[in-house]
Length: 365
Image 1 (cartoon, helix red, strand yellow):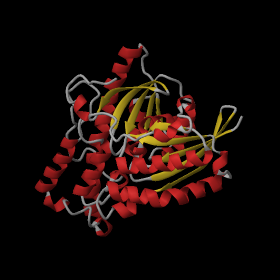
Image 2: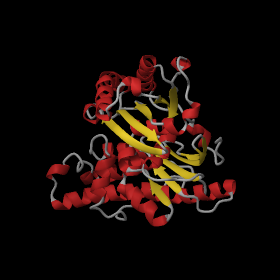
Image 3: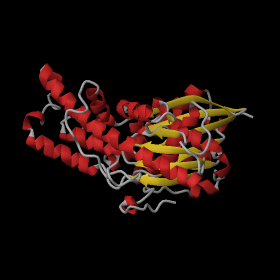
């Protein structure tokens, strides 16, 4: 029997809706559209929750109309609605949840509340078969976490950043370099032309022998580096008019800064695999890497070189998107909340408390 699943994602600044069909264990993405707010948020140098929520409100209705039209369906054809409920910015989350409830009332269909961090990793199933258990590495703007994933509902946190996420390190570093917002893609592109060993930046918690991350010190190190080398401080702002020598200098800084992040991830993956082995008794579990920062070419190349059994979510499903939400709802449809009980669902902004990982032993569940 063919099923139609709608996915709604509004956890941060991207408004995204996806429509999947499922028949005889075959999943097809019928439509997948995203409205990004990057151009709007450049003015503010980052995400402003109130502005993001208002833009979600403006874009959800036309996105819903365009995705259902492209998929060739009507609201009545929808069998299940997936929507991000945790974690994220509370205003944007509630905007998406209220949209899901509206569709549920119109179609009288159930809602599957989705943790979009889990959905990021389970998006691997959209393009390849992946057996459990696996080691999940979620790398995004707000989170950098290792999960032991033993089923579609069994996610155990093995280690997390204790401060900034990898995505924050890229964006904050880019701001210091004058590259604008968001800076991750710009640093990645410039790094391809630079020498990653030109400058040495610190690796957070390098000697901790566990799978916790820390990236706040890296940002501080870059600030101090630029204060000591003022001739490099404004190269990012002038990057379209740089001389070849100046461009090479900027690329070297970006490559070296990115190299510190890549090195930290590669190092901590080794400890995460060891911890996963101690729990499961399975050596060299497959690694699944997802999240918006998983698109970074340096991170992908570094992990692929060091670990033979690493699997990356398809880039088009790495950033926050409705297709991964619909996919996770489908995989876990048995846990969906029936109508009208689903109208009582609420959103929650926080997933974990990073302070829980500030000690050597994490308080993961």
